[in-house]
Image (cartoon, rainbow, N blue to C red):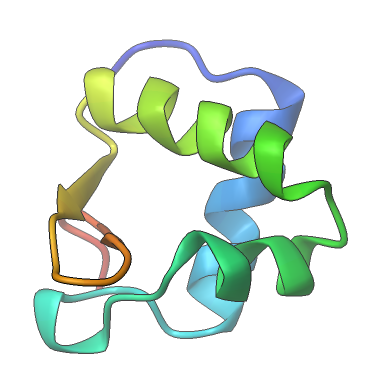
Length: 73
C-alpha cells in the first residue's frame, strides 16, 4: 500500500471511528469532515487522494458521494 500522509491517516482514522468500513456503511464527506474536525475542502481532496491510492472506495450517489474503507475489518 502507498505511504499515507498525516492528514490521510487522520481521515482514515475518522472514517473508522464513524464506521465507514463497508459499502453498506458508507459516509459522506460532510460526515467525515465533522468527525475529523477538518475543513470539508481538505477532506474532499484527501478522500480523492485516498481513493487514488486504493485505500478507500468512492460510490457516486444522487446527492452526494459516499466513501468507505476497503478491506477494513
